Image 1 (cartoon, rainbow, N blue to C red):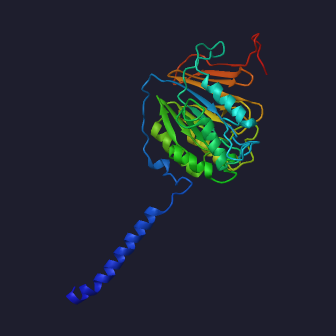
Image 2 (image 1 turned 90 degrees about the vertical axis):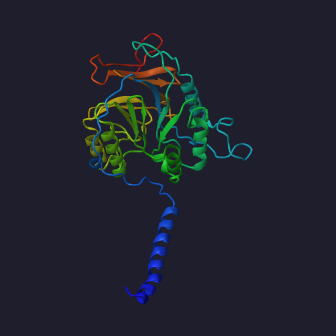
Length: 345
């Protein structure tokens, strides 16, 4: 290139460089999306076989459908923001009853013929519908009641919440707050050998990709617990985007062959146990309506135990105890009993 042509090219090269720099700067300052970005396909990730280390002894609680803000007002008697702890509404009082019961659950005796007492929970999973309408003041009241790390709200234990359909009524405010607290609306973590995977309201395309990636990373040996909001069978398990498409069938295919020891959900304000695609599923109660219960879960190297505590009736509603990880001891289950030892319906 001649000297004259080189001098003519300088403005063009500088201009291209400035455009590229400006574009990179703009991309850096774009606001983050409220939704999670698409996850890579699980087929792109090699499976890692992670053997169990042993020594697992994990206790945790599972609640759902706290519906903070139900039949409540944002303002208090003085016209300012209402404090749910000092000026509780009717629904706040039930949530406070649940929180106080959870705080006292330590050393509660498991129902007979189970033995032993409840150890201090590692945390509380809350399976969606945290708020009645997803409004900011309802979220703030949820945080005042349940906190995050344990002790920063009325609850003594760390909280691992997901969103439900009610949390999207007003906006995506609650989903954004969950993402801020846990890094994403779907996330996973370890308690000893146990892998806990949260799936939000229910897994859509991105959620299934996230789940498949997690499963392949965990492998087939370690026990896995999952929780989501929507029911998989029974009442209120149809008539929504998750149930009426092919997502449920795709979820079953994704889980096939993995060591899923339990799946928890809310949405239907009752409690019970059923099987879906060979997986034990546990529906936990709600502070809304009258099934005021939560699940107490104990996991060891060889056993998986779930007992539902109805804190308003002061009774164990049902319990289920089964062998896991290849153990051969018998599976057992039972219903609630009154003071005379009779089962309650």
